[in-house]
Image 1 (cartoon, rainbow, N blue to C red):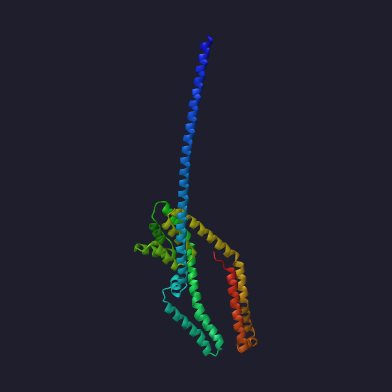
Image 2 (image 1 turned 180 degrees about the horizontal axis):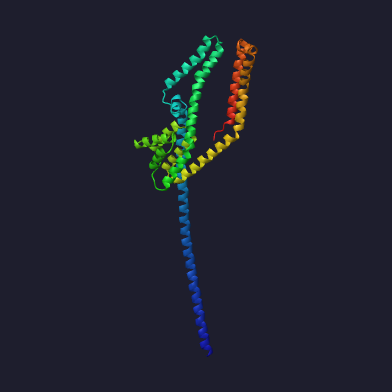
Length: 328
C-alpha cells in the first residue's frame, strides 16, 4: 500500500473516532441534562409529597387534639354530676328517689340518737351515734353497692372488647357487636349495653349513649372505650386495632390491680387487727370487771375520752385505708 493511501485511511479513521467522541459526548451531555431534569422533577415531587404527608399528619393530630380536648371537658362536667345523690343511686342500680333516701337517713338518725337519749345516755354520745348511723351508714352501704357493681362490670369488660374486635375484623358492624354483648354478657355488663343498644335503636347518637353509660358507670374503662370510639368516629382509623390495644391495656390493669391486692393483703390484715384490738379489749374488760369500766361509761370525763378515742381510731383507720388503696 502506497503512503498516500495509508495516510488517507488513517485520516478517515481519526475523523470517525473524533465523530464518535463528539456524538458520545453529546449523548452524555444530553443524558446528564435529562437526568438532572428528571431528578429535579422527582425531588420536587418528593418534596410535595413529603409536605402533604406532614400537613396531613399535622391536621390529623390537630383533629385528635381537638377531639380529646372536647372529650376531657365533657368528662370533667360528668364527674361533677356523677357525685350527686341522684346519680349515685343510679350507679348503685337502686330504684329509689333521693327524697326517700334522705327520709330513711333521718329516720335512722332519730332512732339511733333518740332512743339512747331517752334511756339516759349522754347527749354528746347520742349526737355522735345519730350522725354515724343517720349520715354515715346509709352512704357507706350505697358506696358498697356501687363498688360491688363496678367490680362485676370491669370483670367482663375486656372480654366485651374482644367480642367487638373479632366482630369488626370479620365484617360485622359495631351495632351488631354491641347487641351480641348486650345479650350474651352477664349483668351488669349486659344490662348496661342493652341500654346503649336500646338508646341507639331509638335514634340517639352513639356518643350520647356512651356518655349516659359513663354517668351510670363512672369508671376509667368506660371512659377509655368512649374516647376510642369518639376519636375513631371523628378522625377515622382502624377500630379493630384500637379496641384490641384497649383490651390489652384493660387486662394489664386488671392483672396489676390483682397483684397490688395480693401484695397489700398482709398490711390490710394488720390494720384490721390493730383497729379491732382496742374495741375487743374494752369489751373483754367490761365483761370480766364491769366496775373497772364505770368511770369510762358513766362520767363526763369518760365520755369525753370515749369520743376522743373513737375519733382517733376512725382517723387512723382512714389514714391506713388511704395508704393501702391504690387507684389503677
